[in-house]
Length: 130
Image 1 (cartoon, one colour):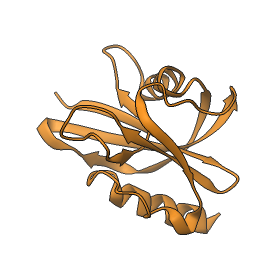
Image 2 (image 1 turned 45 degrees about the horizontal axis):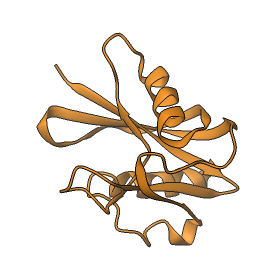
Image 3 (image 1 turned 180 degrees about the vertical axis):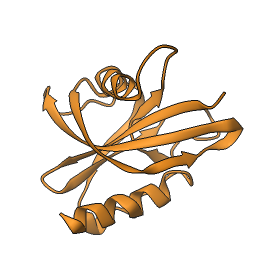
């Protein structure tokens, strides 16, 4: 059975929120979309909302899905949604080393994890479409 990981491409004022991994050690320091694993019996979108509340302290509203299933290692797939913050203050790095808002020209200025980089490019294209 495929294990699903969900992530939020959180957009505010045309900027994208990026999150720097704290763990596991082999991924520490890489940048990613906030999110996490879908629990048994949980929908993808419920997991996305829960993960953003746990990791960032904000409530998001998922919008358009970015691509399909993005393959990860060990049979995992990543599903990403463009999202907006609907409740909460500024996102907090509760489980990450740092958070950074990136302007469109800065999207590739951080060392994204290899699995996330093609999604960043897809997000750029979606934002250009408006």
